[in-house]
Length: 136
Image 1: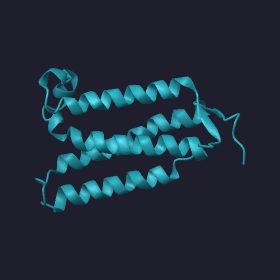
Image 2 (image 1 turned 120 degrees about the vertical axis):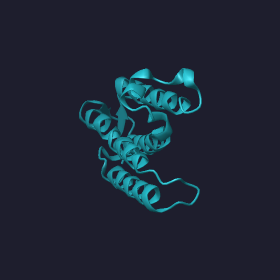
Image 3 (image 1 turned 180 degrees about the vertical axis):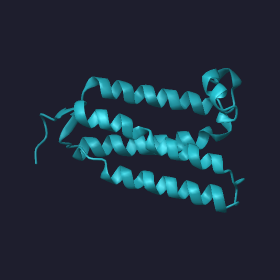
């Protein structure tokens, strides 16, 4: 793939750490030994809503990482986040098909869609370098 930017080491390392963290959150849904007590202290029902957070987070992270490497922007990823927030809202508030409507799930999906943009800010600002092999 001929991309104009490449990531420095720290953003790649942090990217994988974030994926490991959300994977552990996802595992905590079924395995009690994987649950993080601090999150349970914050919200005792955290793991009943973790799926919305994890899925939204992963979709935004992957989209944004690729978009930043190709254009140093996140405009398309912002639209994906808006779509995920909107879809979460509609599905969790109004559509009971294969789902028990749960408004709290909407908020977890919202946070999962927005949180990656903190990472993107630092990645765009300090985590890129020009690709020496890039040709237009």
